Amino acid sequence: MYLQTISEPEATDRVAEIYAAQRSQLGFVMETAKSFTPRPDLLPIYTDFLDRIRAGFSLGLREWRLITLIAAKQVPSTYCSYVYAKQLVSDLGSMDDVLAVQKNFRTAGLPDKDVAMLSYAEQIATDASKITQDDIDRLRSTGFTDRQICDIALCASFRCFVSRYFDAVGAEPESVFIDDDAGVREALTVGKAYATPER
Image (cartoon, rainbow, N blue to C red; front, side, top):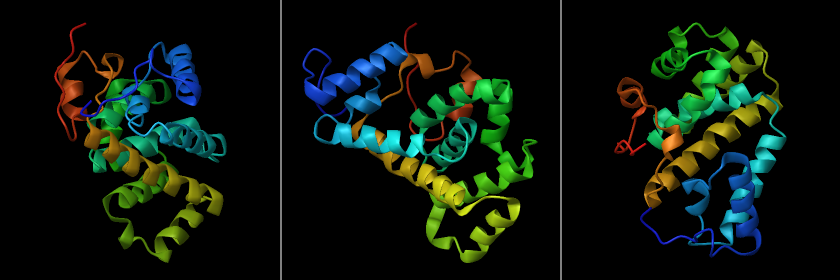
């Protein structure tokens, strides 16, 4: 991390609560949480906003992870690619399946609805100014409701913001998210390269 952050022993109030919740759930506190603590007033806002988006997300967790993987590739964010690729293994069946989607979701054997969703997410992360009413109508014709389209846009746009912020302040992926396979790491290193940590 490039900035000085609040350590776990130093944490108080909501920062301490958020740290404790992450340690209880994950076994550690993510760098992503710590990265907001140079402005400790913002960590609860970030956490609450993310929790609110996810709580009302009208698509499944699989879709959240797929959108995030594709948006992270475009940012480009290696950290978020590592995290969400690892999580998607349980949804897609294998890391090979995840890497096929990450390489080219249009030819990875996904359903047409997923391809339409990810095409929209990709365009948001690449250049949202090019999106037109035709793109929205195409999503509707594929079976997405306006609420679901809103949620795709929120998920992809949120990832663009946070991924760029994490890189800007030097947050690095925890070792649990870094694959032992060098080929997997190479495929998912879409932006910043990280040294392989000691196990």
